Image 1 (cartoon, helix red, strand yellow):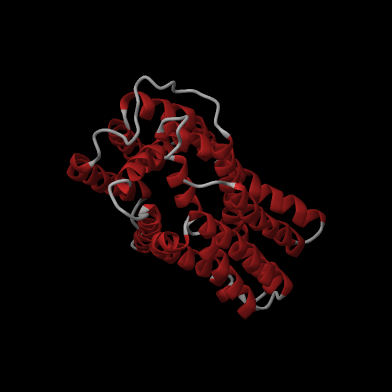
Image 2 (cartoon, helix red, strand yellow):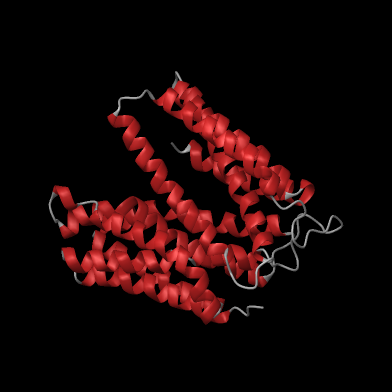
Length: 331
């Protein structure tokens, strides 16, 4: 399973290079086909070695699509008088819910994974063919004379740090929220997933309202509030580890982290020192380190002390988001 994040991280500089060199439209189409066509191979893998190679390619293609499609989103956002980036990520969250629902249906219907994956690949390729003609042909701010690999400026590094702390919080919720409910809240086996579900619901919903709030408050205040919400939600669940308060706390965390990454991608895409694709790749590289480091960090602290203390430390990451956002000057 470690091959998946390795492929993801390996793709970051490659995706940035391809987007800067050939444009995000070509990269989106190529990455979408690679990503979709690799999926059935996971179902047909007959040995650990085959599965490892396929997972690496799957992670590679998936994140290449992530970088290139976010570059497209930055260009599309510039065609509108207000922020729309968070809405794109909201649709991504809906796709996650849809994928989980389809997967559940397939399992209950006893459909074999290879056939299930082939069906999804067919649908994905059809969508690429239908909608690829609507992609932006020329990326916003793209300059073929601009160096592809340059040193990130202070603003980009700060954006990367915000993404890093945000993804630590997200990784904690994805991997440990159910365990926190099971071991600390102890609501009963049937209610163990309530915290994770609460988090996912407000994270998805928050992305559809995030653009409107960012337009009203401005990106700086939005990031400051997001950090405070993330920290306060985690602290509520830590200080009062009862079912009702922990659920409310996880709801607040979901609302807090919902729009941070979309806003950071949007801000990074306006970089003056890097092309849009490379800037997003640079910020993503720093951010994904948090996603990989966060869950093991929680496990290590929890083993040495307790889950409540480890979640309390994660709450400090939310505070760091607010502090860093306060220092950044937004255009």
